[in-house]
Image (cartoon, rainbow, N blue to C red; front, side, top):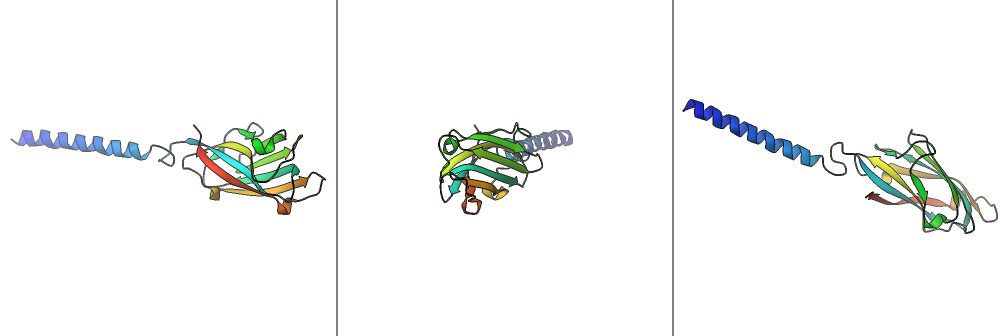
Length: 161
């Protein structure tokens, strides 16, 4: 009889260990789940400007873990509908600052338009609070500096499918 109890106890311990492993594995699934890297699309929009812009430069400081995909000028960013025809450069210094420079082409950039989308990889889903956007230059169509009246915001953070 003691031999049967030992076998039952060993079987029970093995079963509980398997259940614990499944629970730990499930906790690591999806964004923010214990080390699983996930890619997110971060969208920046021009949300305020006194007039259409001919050029716009801004820096994005990020904190809380994660990094924009790519390095240096090869960072994974692209222009969106609000920057149609613009020329662009993107530069990630890999020490938590992304620099974006846009120069309008045929159509100046207006407020309330998505202008840039970048890929960002992190273990936990970032929030808008992880990104601080500072406009370093904004020129209207006449070449007047309007950076103090110009605002760029993170308007969307979605898991990149």
